[in-house]
Length: 238
Ligand SMILES: [Ca+2]
Image 1 (spheres, rainbow, N blue to C red):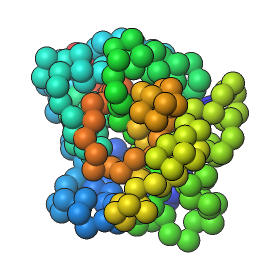
Image 2: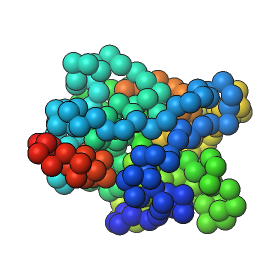
Image 3: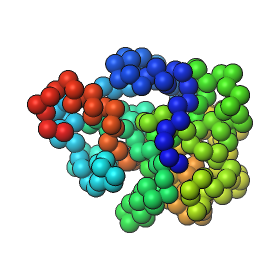
Image 4: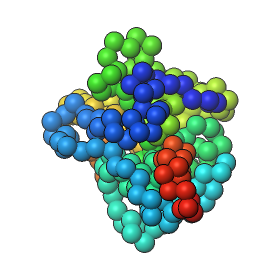
């Protein structure tokens, strides 16, 4: 996928970093069990941004896998906590826009035998997503990268420019992903996108997962947060 498709007026507003930082609150799941009230997106911490882990670089952006850092070596956190850890470093959870980037992430998972990782993929199923016929059906057209607000192309076909569909062909119900399988079990919507490593005998592939699950994660540089911190801290080395 090339370019960024702005999903919502809500998000377009948030493109202004100041409003982004001030206005976006936690996007809550529909399940009371998974709601932790009062949780917001974290602001970048300039000193942490300048000392952020730079495990590898792709297309000018730095990435790191939490399992490769001293501090988060054994950490498993829910989706929002993972985003916030990344964001304090001027990063965000990884957004996988191309097959080449996906292969990079799949290889990282394979080579390190990681069981799964969080990405920034999110289902648009919260306030602001109502009455959006263009996002229907939600399980096909309702997904986006929350870090960049880029649209994730239709989940039921091979994305334009890719040679395969990264969504798994199997899962808990032995159905192609996203399948929102946990909803039938306990009412939790599977609103977050995780890359799982052969959990269902399906190889390394994308799955929709309840956002409360705790997983290691991959952070990627956020242009937006880096630019913001650079503009407010001109002497800081980023
Ligand atoms: Ca699923």
